[in-house]
Image (cartoon, rainbow, N blue to C red; front, side, top):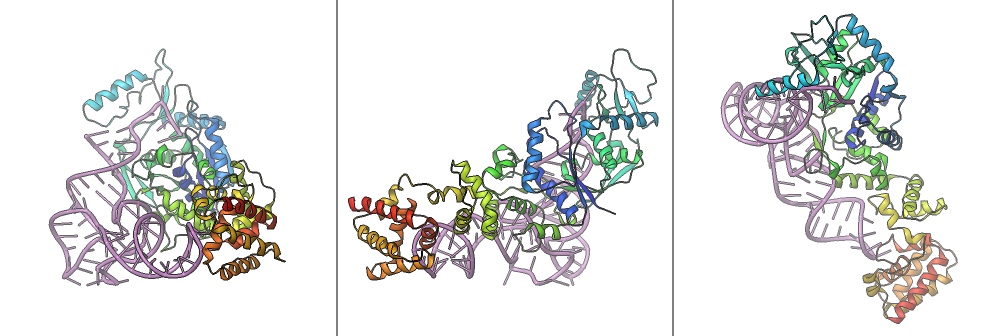
Length: 466
RNA sequence: GCUCCCAUCGUCUAGAGGCCUAGGACACAGCCCUCUCAAGGCUGGUACGAGGGUUCGAAUCCCUCUGGGAGCGCCA
């Protein structure tokens, strides 16, 4: 049987890393075994759903590469189907109209709370035969009164709930629109979902859903309730630490695979391995191996993984990302070959692509100012003659290659009887404006002869005046 | 309040009764390498929430407690 998983976010808030990890687990599980991954947008709450949030879900999934085999489906477009099942439920006696008003319900609840009982519907309308004047009824599912439901969860094991703990939940509002728990059941059945992978905040909803599924005579899916992700401080995920739109990570210069790699290791592991390619994740991930406990979001490790993936990436694959980040800095570059060369030179010294772009601007635009400290230390009267020698040597180079440049710089150091650092640092400041750059030979090669020489000229003037 | 879930270094985790004087990774500190910054290598510190059992033997099994979380909506 083909495995079919789904990711069913609701567009009432921004898609954040918690949701992304759930999506990733579902996607990996299906893709790792030739299954189908379905995207379904649960937008039945028209009050709170926004187009913006829907767009973030779509864009986010695309950016991450978590492509859906089917969908996106929207629940608001399946209303006819829900009404059909609703009518069927009422006809078959699995559901009934409830005429209790919101006020009556609120009173019932507060009385129960005052009596330190679990707030639940008392079933007043269960056996009502006559409508009540002036009240638009809701529809409630007739939950079994006794017995128990066992959720067979691949992560948590068997979890048993007594039906007496469950009440008759509302499945259609008084305006006739269906509610979440009901829609999920109908959709999962219709879409033939075989594995329901979702946050463990849904574990408590599952017995109700199972009862409805049973009433429909549907085959039960396999459940896997994954633990939630906490903020870096161990508290609930909030805007402060991670509950931002997933697209924020693109802005900050993260590689999709790095974010995915970080997320897959939250609650799951494979021996001592930390860095995984997408292919490895697919091949190795199994929902059965996911931990039960919540885990805290660790920005440092995400950063480290991002760097690991940047280092492992081919320079060419980094080009679009670097271009995107440079554009964000107002620098538009069309020379892909140069971009690749810069990416190659910088890839092991940047934790994010944003950082890479910030440290690479001097390759593409003229440097406006020298870093004050760096200039004061390296563009001195002492270094002026060194820079002149370097300029002379480099001008005479027949081939502008890193190797040739390397030799030339070394020669200056040797003939002047000074350390390589005394030569390289002034050059570095001259061409980059700062004391930090890739190895000087590589830097100059990528920069090109003309730019290099003119910047050294300019630096000689500054150094000579010091 | 009731129901359900969870519990190994600061963090992510390995560990499915003896291989654990608890391993790896991030972060941190020191050293090495070195033209800067990185990367890389080496070294170091810090954890089985508590108490009872079971067992020759428990991080691993059972119970209680404690602590954390979720649900109990005409939200999803």
